[in-house]
Length: 91
Image 1 (cartoon, rainbow, N blue to C red):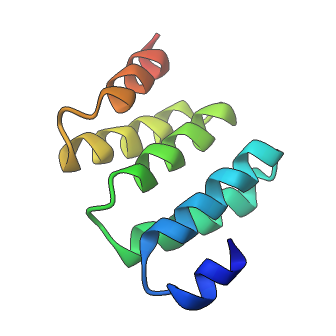
Image 2 (cartoon, rainbow, N blue to C red):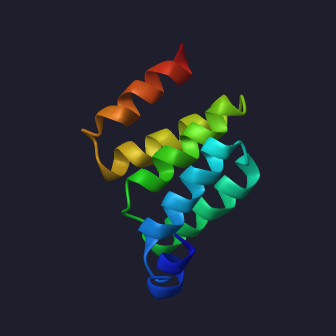
């Protein structure tokens, strides 16, 4: 994936994928940093705020997670995973 960053550093997708990988490895702060880069690269990239919300929720930061989940739904109102996560956060 690092090679993808070198080639496509202007795009959100590689940053977001690296962030998700770091999240799954348990490196939450690094995941948030990488996903934040993805959000800066493309404000309309729906997966970035979704994964950001997912990481925050896993850290127990429910208020912040809800903000990013709602941001995701502003971009894509029918994004099913975001609705599921939002429901989880609210419960």
